Length: 275
Image (cartoon, rainbow, N blue to C red; front, side, top):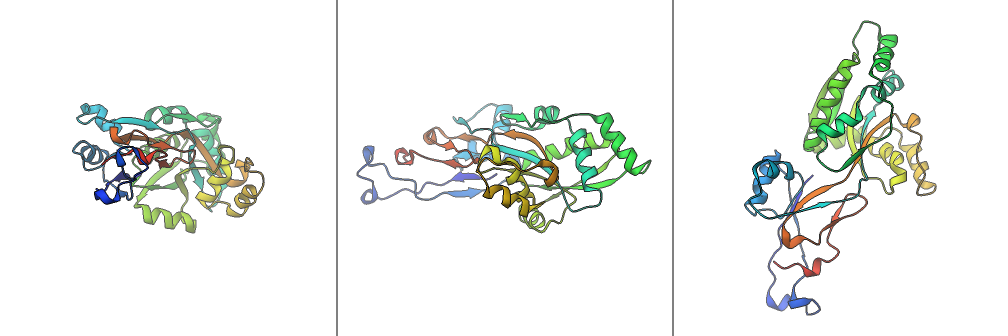
């Protein structure tokens, strides 16, 4: 959720003799964060950053003013809602799993290549679960969101609308990244919206449990088994929603940039880059 920038010019004595035309390795990167997608797009288009994480939608809306290349990674980043240590946690997990329209959420809010995680969408049954447990009283829950993740804010609003139809009153707590991380690690949330990059695609649920701090002991046990071991979603109180790719908008001179299976950007051929 930050942008990569800054390639310091090397002196001629520092040029790499083993590279074509003596081009040097990139030896430093600077990360910048922005308050809005538009700010990020504008910074890319005036050349103050070379790689943008969230700018593509804003650039498409106005038309590109600076050349760029879209780079997509594999669909391994899993969006999820975790249910914290609250009363009736299992009932809440069932209601979430039934009430959220994953396909509509993916279509309307996720701005990158994505596919929904298999699940049953049954809003009538979700509402019945709420009425069975709480009667005419509307349960009230809070969803913790990292405000620096723009797409997560949009996803949270869609979840709010879906739960409202099921009879659940949801408020969204959007906090800064440091506060979000501290609260997740301490388990201080009722619901938490997050994204996990698993060490392997088949171990997604184990990674989710670790990230969400829902059941770290069970998650560690699962990860200690075969690398493809999955964790029982019923035990973790995690509701996976979709798997998506990381998408970057990249200046042409960085066209060799690639995204690995954990959603991380890297330059396998960085020695070809010129300043």
